[in-house]
Length: 297
Image (tube, rainbow, N blue to C red):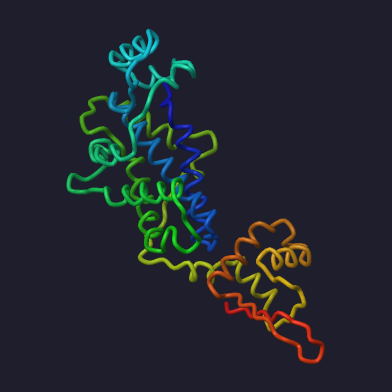
């Protein structure tokens, strides 16, 4: 039976790749950062749980304090199950909802066991997994702001963790497993999804360093925006926000009309990083306040 969590894991992993690449291309607003962390955390959690299912590790799920006959029957059937993919794959939605699954902090403690032979004996990914957990908890449960969430170093660490995690998936084999199908099953489903292999490939050079400002400066879209706005301009608009700039660019250039959201995101980043500077100027003769915009890209 097909691994029951992998379709969900595929979607989360593909999303994590998209948001990671967007951030490397300069689209690093809080929305993109949150989506990157959330998607990566989801992909890692689901894949590690799938590894436990493939290895028939019953610690992956449990029924907390069975309250009725149905709970008691399910708990007994689960403890006797020898193929957890088949077990969960045949349950109804109501039956599945009665189970609790292992928490992420316990996955971290078990990660060397879960990753099995695809992780070197002396290797540990505890630091990276704990970082991912902390960021996900902050993003979900506490106040975060642009500029205080997902630092450049934290993004670099998670980017390089994705490279290692991708290799683990490709070579995964349970440490105590004696059935080659356990490994091939995960391999087959990982590299032969319906959307095609390229959607899930993450194979690039590790980041030795990372800078949000450099990412924006290297972005083709940022360069196109800077070219359109180059020089000193004065505007009489009372507010020259990223939205206003993006709206004028999209409406005034046919080639950009379909990219409003991307333009808005990039202009926002350019302003946050001081690459677009808007100053107000008092016109002494007319008594009108104008806005002077400079592009520092």
